[in-house]
Amino acid sequence: MLTFCCSQTSLSRKCAVPASSGAAITASGTFTPLDSPDAQGGSLITAITGTRNGQTIIALQPAGTWIPGNEPYAVDNLVFAGAGPQLTKAGFGFALADGTYSNPFYADFLPTPGYLEFYSMPDSGSSTELAVAFSATLVSTPEPATFALLLLSLPLCHIPGVLIKPSRS
Image (cartoon, rainbow, N blue to C red; front, side, top):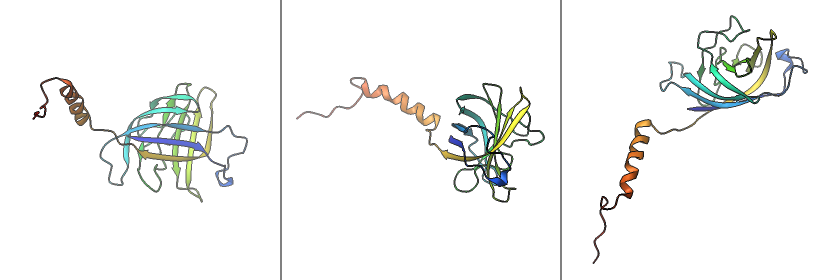
């Protein structure tokens, strides 16, 4: 599992985003990626939970499709652990409980590369594209089989007569 955090950074003139374009962005949550990365080291995100500005993330946008309002820019849902860009220029997409959508991505095509978020509000037909800070951190979770064995062995520790008692002399 990977946890992620995304927050708005100071806006760069190179991003051509007006200073009045909106309030601060704060998003955080957890990705569930495939265990085996692709040839470039990217892991496919298969599930996502979390919030963006207090709104619950309700769905991951399927890879190869675009969030509403961002056609033809399809997401690839790849995340890279470690140093360097952790997203591609396609990024990942998700739907929020209020009917809006987000697509954070790494804009390697800018004169000064950085992370951006395309935010779509289909009901009003509007969108924003703001500079954000993005970070994903690997979270260690026990393997299900190991966890199950641990749980099954716990009762044995409390059954009288099952454990070998030291002899008294």
